[in-house]
Image 1 (cartoon, rainbow, N blue to C red):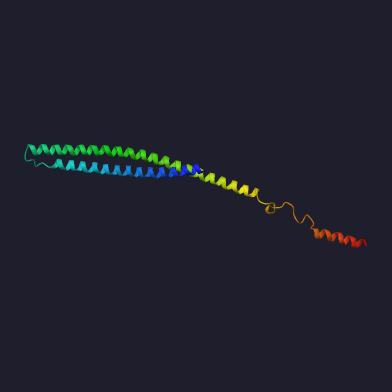
Image 2 (cartoon, rainbow, N blue to C red):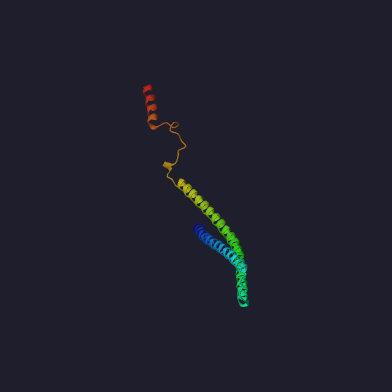
Length: 158
């Protein structure tokens, strides 16, 4: 039973760890999604500007727009990777939670069996006075009643 209790404790720790990892993965997914959306919006906004003074400025703007698009694409990929991580972490969390539940149920069952065994052993080891008697006092005459009957028989004969 101590082994099962230890396994339950470890399962609970694993569950907390899996839940934390799942929360981290969800946070990363949300962050990368926001980053991708914002970067795409910046790139779109940047392309709207048509006031180009010269070729060098145009080249700089195109380079910047390309960099923004690359960042947006990378952020989207990171978001997809984070989503996959969330899915994996969710599966791990579900397995860990199921294991903890099974071990907790097993521990509760083992404790119940142990309690029942202790109670049964206590009943078996109880002194005879505390055990219920199968003989009724109404069936067996008491000693004083038996003496009274013998005394009345002697007085009737004499």
